[in-house]
Structure formats: C-alpha cells, structure tokens
Image (tube, rainbow over all chains, first blue to last red):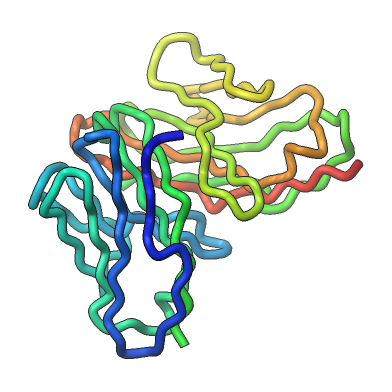
Length: 113
Length: 115
C-alpha cells in the first residue's frame, strides 16, 4: 500500500465550527488530491495540488480551502462546517497526475451535527 | 468536462456466477481508464487500469476489462465470482492532458455475492 495517512480518521463536529483534515504521504509524490464520497455520488474531486503552494479547485470546492506548505502534507479546511459536508473524505496521491494511477488513503469520516 | 456512467447501482449474484459491470464515459479526447474496488470499511484499491496498447487488460483477483473506443466503454468482467468479491466498484477516468487531472468517478456499483 502507498504510504498515505489521514488524520483524524473520525470526527464529529458542530455546524459553524472550522475543521481541518490532514493528509500525509511518504512517497514524495508531486500530486495530491482531496475527494469526498457520498452515497449515490461516488467520489467527487474537491481540490488538488500539483506542487508545494500550487493548488486548484475541483468539482465541489465551495466551502473548502486547502494548503500545501510541504510536499508530504496536504490540508483540507472546512472554514465553517455545514451538515451538507458530512461525508467521507479521501486523500489521493499520484506521481504523474492524470497520466498515472492515483493511490488512496484510508479516509476520514466526518459528521457535522 | 468528462463524465462517467455506471449502469448498475446494485448487483446481486451467486458464487461462481459470471460478472460484467458496465462503464461508459463521455469525453472527446484521449482518456486513461480505471476500475477501483472498495471493500466494506476500507479505502479504494486499484483493480486495473488502461492507458494504451492492448484494449483487454487484466487486473488483480481475476478481474479483466475491455476498452472499446467506439463505444466509449470500459466494462469490468470476472468469469466466476467469489463471496469475497462483495464490495463497491468504481469506474473512473482521467484525461491525458498532462496536468494534475483529478479522476472523474462513476457513482459506483454495489456488488453482493451470495454464498
């Protein structure tokens, strides 16, 4: 398995609070991604990064921000959590972006009350 | 933008039955194609992928898929399923533009194998 960890693995929070999820990789891959998984929707891309401090929006980026200050860490922040952001969040990494396989982390299950 | 359609949201089969899961994509250019599997409570694992070359690709655990360019399809097959194949299966595509290119996923097929 690719060296990807996500923290926390489970979190319960209240509407309106900020939440930060962390993805850490040991593969030194350039590309990192955040997806959310919801029943009936599959996985949808939130944000991605193509290098340190280089990030861009995905399909469902509203309400989320990201930061990447080091190659190994990619942070996803919910500035003010809403119930619609209750989901399972997966981080993925890739050495060559769309030209190569993406490997997924174990996921973070987030419940916003 | 590309999109992916998986025809069956839920499939129930008996052990030893043959499996075919449909996947169609829409995109005017060249794509990379993937099938991922998610076992209950686990993260996504790559089953197989197609980038170029032989359109019939073989993956792990006896799975294979065939890329038919004219039909924009990448169907997943297995000749004889096992109870341990119970999982959710996702078809995904990325473009070959050379950029970061996140994956576009289908909505998934929940496969249940009955002993």
